[in-house]
Length: 341
Ligand code: 5HM
Image (cartoon, rainbow, N blue to C red; front, side, top):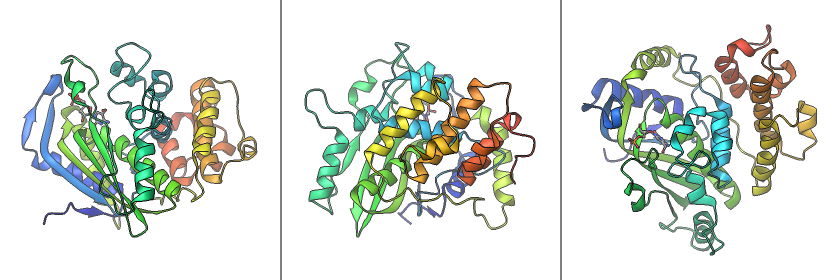
């Protein structure tokens, strides 16, 4: 079998990758001091890339961070200010204390080249509009200069993203040199599939498959205890299906929606505004993007109003799966009556 195994959801692929690296690792090593178990050459395919996030109580993920990172990429950004607000550990990736280089994938994909006015993404979009079956629509991230400084804290793990439009559907193939199966993998698949879905919306195409290829797939030994609990929970799922279904991004999604969400994300991050669901409804965004913005409002309440639980009305307005994840990530910050099963 030469094709990568296909999964209906990322939750199932994630459990399969964890099991594979945990049970069948080829190497135990410690690159740059990180004790790991490693498999060389791991791939999988997602039939429905929209089902991009796990709903496992043993692995409470941070949906606010995942949307923040995906939007930070789409915004073509490299500022530490935004990304480190949601993941303070990202500060270790910066050399100058204000920007990120290697893992600011969006800066390499979506920001215009100096003096040439067009981004790599603009070129790929133009190509896919003119030659529908093209095999050339590649968004490169890794550059040979990334290896110039052996002490660099941040060499890109993503080599590039390949887009293929076929029979009305937009497929994506991601190529990574390295992926941490319990940490980076979750964030990377979330962001890359969101970029895929956004691009499909811009091109007026249906969402196709997502294929993930990794050179070094590894697990930090510090993650192993939790991995055991995650696999036990995944095994116990009655039909192997995740608890929630992620809704589609609206077909009319456009750059202005991303720009508007990023403008208001900044105001919420700096605690300059506070929004009720009714306030957000007045911003002219589709319901999907309103719910994304309400995740940032919930996070504002968690960060800036430490004495109070998150407002029930905001929790109720979130996408049900995202609400479930918020409740598990910050159980101590929920109203007494809130937690959903
Ligand atoms: O020594 P190295 O540069 O490979 O360390 C980077 C670590 O972060 C690896 O464990 C890599 O797999 C993980 N990582 C990831 O999984 C890093 C990034 C950021 O580029 C990422 N996914 N997107």
